[in-house]
Length: 237
Image 1 (cartoon, rainbow, N blue to C red):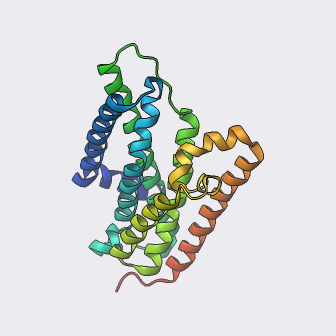
Image 2 (cartoon, helix red, strand yellow):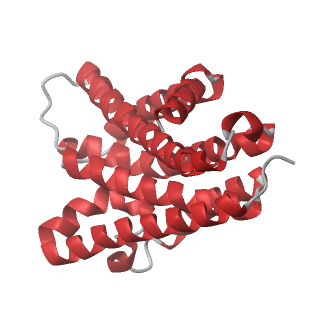
C-alpha cells in the first residue's frame, strides 16, 4: 500500500499539470476575492461570498483532477509495471482514491489561505467571518472521497479516459444546475456538502449523522464494487 501511495504522490508532485492546477487555484482565488471585496455590500461576509463564487470552479477542477489521476495508467498502458500481481489491486485503487481526496482538500486549503492573505493585504484590520473550518474540510473530505470512489467505479467499467472525465465533469455541472431547485435535497449533494455540512449538524444531529453515514456507506460500496470488477479484469494484454 505504501509503495503505491508513494508512487501516486510523487506522480502528482512531479507532474506539471498538477502544479498548474494549484497555480490556477491561487490566481482564481485572488481574482474572485478582490472582485468580491469590491462588489459585496456586507464587508464581514467577503470570504464567504468569495468561496461562494469559487465553489463551482473548485468542483470542476477537482472532477478533472480526480478523473485524470484515475485514468492515467489506462491512458499510458502502464499496468504491467504498476500492478505486478493481482494481490496489489486493492491497494492500487485505495491509493488513487486517497491521493485524489487529499489533493482536492489541498486545493480547498490553498483557496482558504489565499483568500485570507489577499483580504489581509488589501483590508488589514477588517473583521471577517468565515465558514466553520473543521466542518468545511470534513465536508470536502467526505464528498471528494465519495466522488473519487464513484469515478473509480466508472473507469473500471469503461476503461476509457474520456468517459471518466466526461462523467466527472457532467455530474458536477448537473449538480450545480439543480442545486437551487430544492435546498433541502441539494444540501446533501457532493458539490454543496463542503458548505452545507455545518448547517446540517447545527439543525439536526440525527439528520447529519444519517447523511454522513450514507456518504461512508456509499463510498464503501462503490470501492468494493470497483475491486470486485477490477480483480476479474485482464490488464496485461
